[in-house]
Image (cartoon, rainbow, N blue to C red; front, side, top):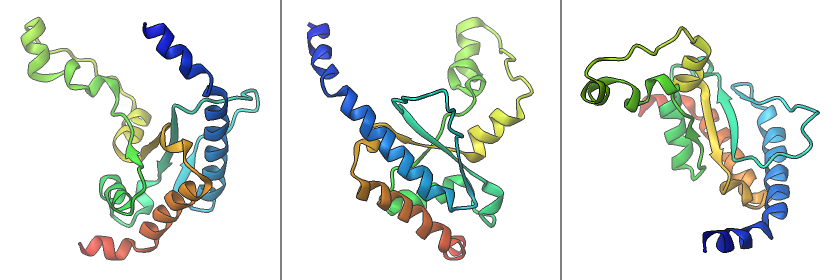
Length: 160
């Protein structure tokens, strides 16, 4: 039963991948003009990407004292569905704290020295979900315009 339902989802898949690739390429072009954002570099060996997530990052230090969390809340208030990315896996609640002590009777010290993971997980990393990337060119422009609007009004955001 599950296979038959999933099988019907294969028909539109190629077109959806094409749509997401086009959306991401457009976002790459729009975000390239913004000095406080960075996107993943394209690998020329990859000719097709299904874009489960569109990953981008903020140079949080360029936000004039505004945190990623505050910046993204403002972008979301403008209607752009950009969210923070994952925290590092070793900080997931299922791997630390009371839950682990209850399950195994002691704490686990899994935290390696990973400054890049820390920076991306708590300060720089953001993403847009794959379903959003199926939107129109106008939808992608609306997302980019929302990010630009918040960037241009950082001083007002600080006053809130």
